Amino acid sequence: MENRIKEMQLGLFADPTSTIYLRSSQLRLYFSVFASILMRIIKKDGLAGTPLEAATSGTIRTQLFKSAGVVKVSVCRYWMMISSIYPRQKLFCTIVKNLKASLRERQCALS
Image 1 (cartoon, rainbow, N blue to C red):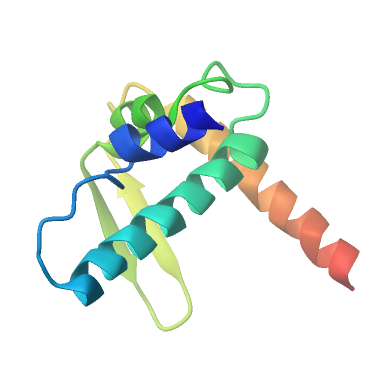
Image 2: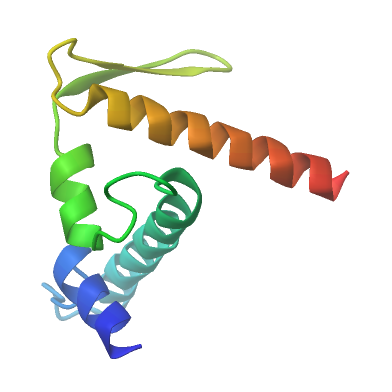
């Protein structure tokens, strides 16, 4: 458990509170907890069977999410466009496919 707390503090910036006001510090911590939950889902479902399966949140953040891209928003869809020379494009596509399959399984289980 201590490793998960340290991972959240260092990788998802849950430690520093940059203000003296309780509400803003609490909101920042909520964002960090939400990011931690999303990272756990990505690690469990999206990264299964990939080289980053056992990676920490900080490694995943720097290797996958810190890249240039364009997000377009429509009424009912989101498009994420990444460069064709992105070095981890295959891995990123694999993760997206794994997450879609996991989402479909969860929807079927709830029905």
